[in-house]
Length: 178
Image (cartoon, rainbow, N blue to C red; front, side):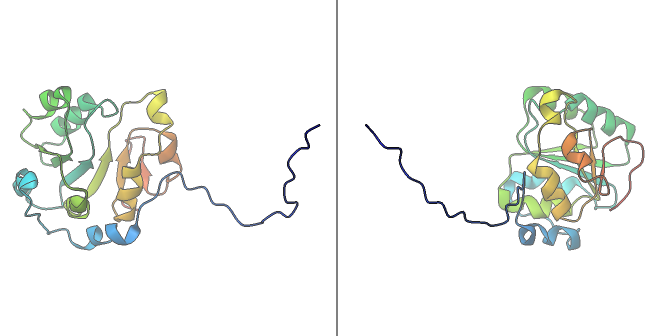
C-alpha cells in the first residue's frame, strides 16, 4: 500500500496583495513635469507637428481590435482645435479613419523608452476602446501608466476605469484633472 506524501504542517503567513496591472512609477514620473520635451527619435517625427500640451490628447498602444477608431475619429472631428496624438502601430481601419483628419497625428510604433516623453506631450490621455464584454474585463496597463505619469484620463466605460473613478472619466460627461 502507498502512503500519501506528507506535507509540512507549518503555514507561512504573509500578506498577499493582488495587483492586476502595475508600472514602475519612477519611469513615468518625468511625464508630469516635462510637457515641452520632444523626442529625437525618427519614429516620432510626426510628434513635431504638435504645438504644445495645452490642447493635446494622447493615446499610446496598438490601434487594433480593442481600439474604437470610429469613436476616436468622432472625437477628433468634434475637437478640431485639439491635437490627438495616436502613438502605436495602427491597423488599416484605424489609419483609414484617422489619417485624413488634420488634427489626428499617427506616429506608428515607438520604443517603450519614449513613453514618458509621449505622455508629457498631452494634457489628457485617452483610452478609446470598443465597448464590449472583452474590453470591460481588461485592466489596460496604459490606464495605470497614464495615471502614474500624473495625467487625467478619459476612457470608454470599463470596470478597470471604475476603480479609478476619482481620476478617470469614463462616461464622457465632464473632463477634469485629478
